Image: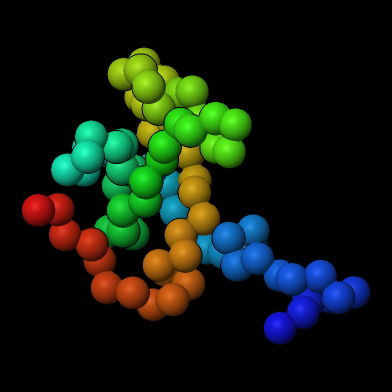
Length: 84
C-alpha cells in the first residue's frame, strides 16, 4: 500500500528502536545482535549492499553496544528470540 505522496512507507525506517546488548554468531558464523527487547537481528557487513565494518572486529562491536537498531519483530509483536 503506498504511503504519503505515493511512496512506500518502510517500517524499518519508522519502527521501534531497541539498543544492542550483546552479540553471538549463528550457525553460518554471521554476527547477530542481541537487543534489549529480547529479539535478535543479523548485523552483516556485506558491501556494497550493507556497510557495517564495525561488525568484523571485537573493538567495533563493543563500540556499538547500546546503539539502537530498528526492531521489526517488536513492531510485529513477535515473542522473544531464543539462542540455540
